[in-house]
Amino acid sequence: MKLCMFNENRLGLIEETKVYDISPILEQLPKQTYPFPTYDLLIASLDSLKAQILKAKEDTVIYQIENINLLSPVLNPGKIIAAPVNYQAHFDEAAADEVTFPKNHVKKIQESGLFLKSTSSLIGMNKSIEIGFADRRTDHEIELVVIMGKTAKNIKAENALEYIAGYSIGLDMTIRGPEERSLRKSLDSYSVLGPYLVTADEIPNPHNLELKLYVNGELRQHANTQNLIMNIPELIEFASKFYTLYPGDLLYTGTPAGVGIIQSGDLITAQIDKLGQLKIHVK
Image (cartoon, rainbow, N blue to C red; front, side):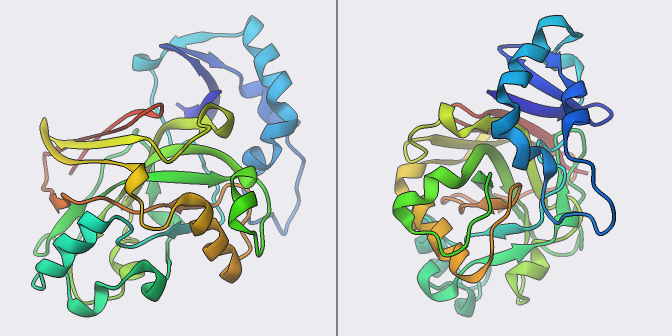
């Protein structure tokens, strides 16, 4: 299934160019009182709601996808986890450019580990990327994003795919400089997710997906997830040693070579096989 959040926090089921408004499904989510859970209730309930989601499309309003505003497909992630330099070609380009990439930041992922991004940095296609610190360089980074579907702690790689709810396209926007990654990548609008969530059953092999990113029609990044240094099960195993992973947690899996500068007025187009196309403007 392809699921989206759109307009005023409506839930949609996407089939080709049609979007079925299945928002009444949201009324079936568990009612919560304070303190509210630190995970996404919809993502946590997806498995149990699949049959009802398919039935809900039978008698509802239908939109054309080009006529709606797509939000982030996950609205309440507990945390955003990201993998640095997880493609060899990007590692090589970063190591060769010590001006842009400080040497102490260019380490193998097994050495540097993962990092967290602020959840307040998350936006969908309905927003624009707003460049912060205009006197410094901001780069684009396309990434496959894993959306966790179950609570996971100390998971082994061989079982990790069972804990995934789905996948989406992400942009890990980055200010270059000497500070820690978490700070430089957590500005408002610096984590983009969309256009929708594709459930894991539609992506049996996430390690053979082609990625492309264009800026104003110019191809900047082009790679395949088969070139990940640490693959998705390994990333989940690694992350779950340090964090308990919850439904709706986002795992940005790393960007390939070709990262480059963006500026106000640019149009970024990112696409990944089977996950659609994300288009977003830069302010």
